Structure formats: C-alpha cells, structure tokens
Image (cartoon, rainbow over all chains, first blue to last red; front, side):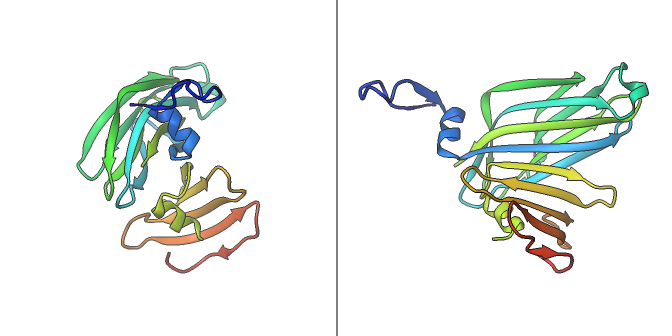
Length: 140
Length: 70
C-alpha cells in the first residue's frame, strides 16, 4: 500500500511504500539476533510477542555469517535463517546462504497481536560460526 | 519504564537479542526520539519463570541490578 501526499502542496512530494512511511511515523520495527559460536546445526532464536491490539508486518530479512575462528575465515559460512510465527508454528520464510543473504518480501508476513514472531538462525557450516540476522517491518 | 515493559508494550523501534552461555538473553531496545537505550538480561523470556537478571538504561542512570521477577 502506498501512503503519502500527492504533490498538491509543493513541499510534500512523492509517495511512500508502507515500510518507508512507517519509518517516518516511527512505527517501524527492526529485530536483530546475534548468535555466537554456533556449531553444525546449532540454532538460536529471538522471540517477540506482538502486543494485543497491534499487528506486526515483516517486510525484509538479511543475515551475515562469519567464522568464529580465524582459521576458518576462508571456508564456506553456510547458514539458514527463518521467519516464523511461533504461535501457529508456520515458517513463512527460510533463507539460506553462504556468508549471508537478504530478501525483500513481495508481501509482508503478518503476525497478529498476541502471537509470537520468531527469528530463527541455524548453522549449516562444518565449523563454528557467528550469525547476525535482522528482520525489518512495522507494527500498527 | 523498565525495558521489559517497553518490550511487551512494543514501545521501541529497534530490538537486538544476544543469547548468553547460561541461556539468558541480553536484549537492547531503543526508540527514535528518546535518548535512552534499555538493556537488560533476562532468562526464560515470556516463560513461566521469566526473571530479569540485570538491567540498565544506557545514556541514563542504572536503575536496577539483579534479582526479582519482571
């Protein structure tokens, strides 16, 4: 959905997509999960229960994966990151990558009030890695 | 307001979580337009035995240290 003002008033030009408009209105939400020393198939999660009466919309996801040790720095840094509704156990996005990846969703993931948004990361590397995942969206 | 309350009210723009070796999670919350950054360490977040182990407001004075349920 586009929000904003047509250029009828001179200084209010352009339209904003909903995530951009949310940043103007300070309703944007950014969730980061920092996970250290994850061995093969170790996982980690970040949970957020959406307050009653609000709805969370997640619009993008990005992550980076690094070796924990310098000796593994030039190896593959495979990882998987998921966006889940932990209340309904639905996995809406599963994103893999070697060293990192990102995606802008063509439609937002909707998490209703009272339900739990979960950011899930899992190491797929054969050595220990650090994963830094961030999900962006807005809550109204 | 305490950090755990801001989390549960959704009164933030940015949240970062980092799990610790003891199973606790350090959560950092910030909101544009506010000078304070709320940082706290919690165990069993959203669970029956949720407990704030440590809490501080960065950019302001430390308001809480150890003990007590949220």
